[in-house]
Image (tube, rainbow, N blue to C red; front, side, top):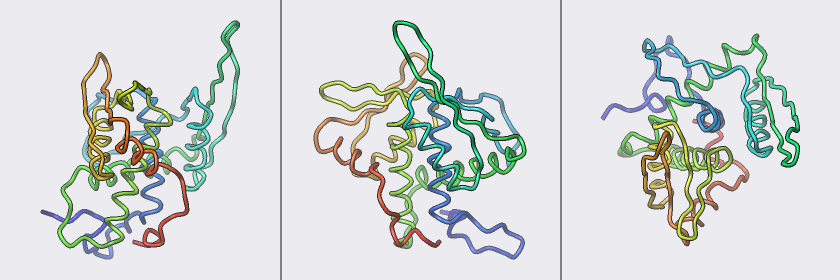
Length: 223
């Protein structure tokens, strides 16, 4: 199996890859966006980034704040606006906007993070992978589930914790990520969405513990 870009020897002309902290932040941000935006069905030329929306809206403040924090970590300036609507039933809408001047870097960063993160999670483990890489893949798995829990459509029953997403790639990543977190997950296609669920009990607890935010692991500070 060919090594991924993170472990591949580089020539002087090859751009330096994302370090694990930046990769994890960018990948989680990309997952958050895929939870609330319609996946593109337009074919694109290989190597051309899919431009994320200039403006994205969340109906949960914690999801908006998380994306705001991740973009700040990635040095992407973003504004956060809050509006309240409704008459009998009040609701909040949180709108994050990236200025046009920063769109190119924003798009390139999230596209690279998504592609490399997806490759790490969907690809088979590399024999002899470093400790930093093994920890990094676990961090990416937790980031995917954290994004889905914050911004996906929750489907909670007495016997399962489920997430509804419209993006097929994200659904597959959640299943693979659950396996990396030692948790069985089931994928069921629905009407216009995919339901990814894990059973209540120890499996659910492992997912919730893995997605709690804590200090970065020392092995992830450098590639």
